[in-house]
Image (cartoon, rainbow, N blue to C red):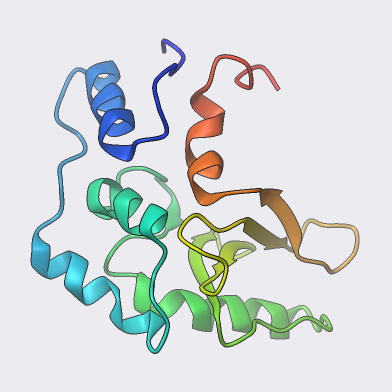
Length: 155
């Protein structure tokens, strides 16, 4: 795969991924899907970067093997809280935390709905040596695009 050298614009990024795949794997979501996405975040507003990402990736093809798509969003915060409880850790999700990704039932990623339109991303995993929320990225956009950048692919 050719490294991505474009901007932090998700339309451009997903056009790049489609070109790499040689097919239209990522398509913009229907407006109804995007409107329904906001319900689990109420009374907070979803960050613009997350909405832009889900517009193209919400169908479920971006993270194969992980739960994050439109149909799973309403369940993710509950699953994150259950994972913390199952591991008996002294951590809790705050009311403005939004779990956007659950991987294989042992790891989840989230951001704070109070942290702006491109919030930092945090993660909890059963694999960590100590129970903590680890900051993975300074922004949601960077969390998504960084692995495709030429200067970070080999890390």
